[in-house]
Length: 432
Length: 113
Image (tube, rainbow over all chains, first blue to last red; front, side, top):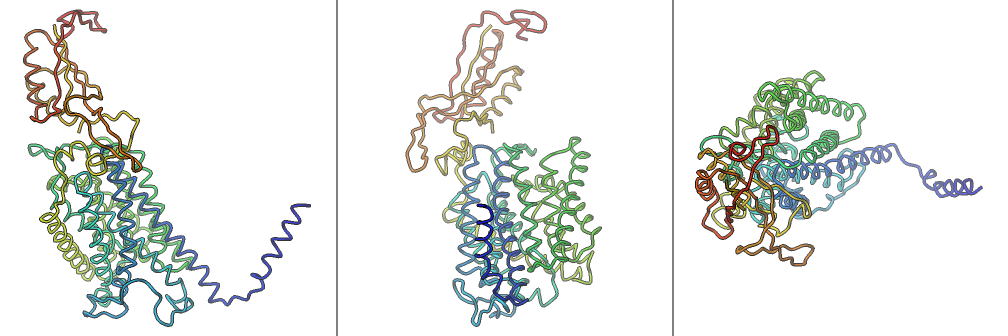
C-alpha cells in the first residue's frame, strides 16, 4: 500500500515535466550537454590520478609537497582560466593575426547568448568554460611531476599561474581558438600537442633550469631514486586512463554516439598497446618486466592517440600505442643519459609521445592533416612553450630562487616547505 | 672482538656504506631509529597547531669486527657520515663477548669474518 502511494506521488510530481513540450533541439542540447558535463568530471578526476601517480613515484619525504602542488595547481589553473585564460584561448577575434586575441576579463556568456545556438546547440557556455578549464589545469600538472622533490613551492606556484593563465591559453588559441595553425590545417583532436607536449616542453625547461636531484647522477653514472608507493602509481594510472574517456571522448564536443564510442575504442586500444610494448621492451632491455614502465606505457599510448583519436583507423591506433610504449621506455633512459632528471617520466610520456601522436595524424590520416603542417605545429608549439617556460623559470631563479636548500632537499620538502609529515605513525626507512 | 654501533643521518648511509666497502668492511646491519641529541628538534604544524618534534629520524648501523678492524671501521664511518654540522651522529664501540654463526655453529672471530 505504501509503495503504491509513493509511486502515485512520484507520478504526480513528474507530470508537469512530461507535459512540458521540448523541441528536438532542446532535447539534443540536454543529452549532449549532460555528456559534456560527465566528460568534464572525468577530466577533473585526472588530477587525482596525477597526484597519486606523482606521489607514488617519488620519495615518502616529499609526499605532502607533491599533494600540495597538485592541489594548488588545480585551484590556480581554474581561477586563472576564469580570469583571463578562457578568453585568451577562445578570443573570437584575433588582434594579432591569428597569434593573439583577448576578449576581456572574467567569464560571461557572449552577447545574444542562446544555449540552443551556442556551440551548435551541443553544450552551454558554462560547460564549455569548465571543460576547457579542466584541460588547462592538466597542462600545469604535467610540469609538477618533472620538477618534483627539489623545486621551491612558492616558485612553482608562481610559475603555474603565469603558464596556465597566459602561455597555455595563448598557445591554445592558435589551434582550438581558430588561430593561424588552424587556418593552415594543423590537426590536434584533444591535445597531444596543445596540452601534453606544451606541458612537456615546460617541464623540460624546468628540469634544465633546476638541475637534477642530489644523488641522481654520481660520478657519471645514474643512481635510481626509487618511488615509495607503487600501488599509488597504479591507482593514478588507472584514474588517468578512466579520465581519458572524458579527455578524448569529451573532445568530440557532443554526445554523437558513433564518434564518441569510436574515440573510446581508439583511446583504449592505444593505451593497451602502449602497455604491451612497454612490458615487452622493458622485459628485453632490463631483463625483468618493470611495473612502472608498464603503467607509464598506458599513459604513453593515451597521450599518443590523443591527437588523432577520432580520425585514425583501428589498427593505426594500436600501432600508435605500440610505438608510444617503445618511446616511453627508451625515452626514460635517453633523458637520464642527458642527465635530465625527471622523477616521474613526464618528459617521455607527455613530451615525446605528444610529439609522436601529433605526427602520427600526418602519417595515418594524411587526408586530415599533412605531415608537413603537423611538423610545423609541433615545432612552433615546442619553440614558444619551451622558451616561455625557460624564461619564467630563469626569472624566478634570479629573483626568489627556484630550488630548495641542499639541507631541505635531503631531509625532505615535507618538513622543509610544510613542517608536516605524510606518514605520521609509520616507520619510514629513509636512506636517500 | 668489538661491536661498533653508529647513529648517522639517513641520507649519509650510501656514503658510509661506500667508505666501509673501500676498507673491506662489508658486513653490517642497518635499522631505523629515532633519536634526540644536540641537534634538538624542529617545528611541525598540523591543522594550525604547533608541534615540537624532538625525535629525529636516524639510522643505526651495527658492525661486529675483530680488533684490527675497529679503527678502520670507525674511520670509515666518520669519513662517510661527517658533514661538520650538528646532527652528524655518534659512534659507540663496545666489547663483544661472543659471536655465533647460526648456519655452521662457528663461534668467535671465525664467525665474524
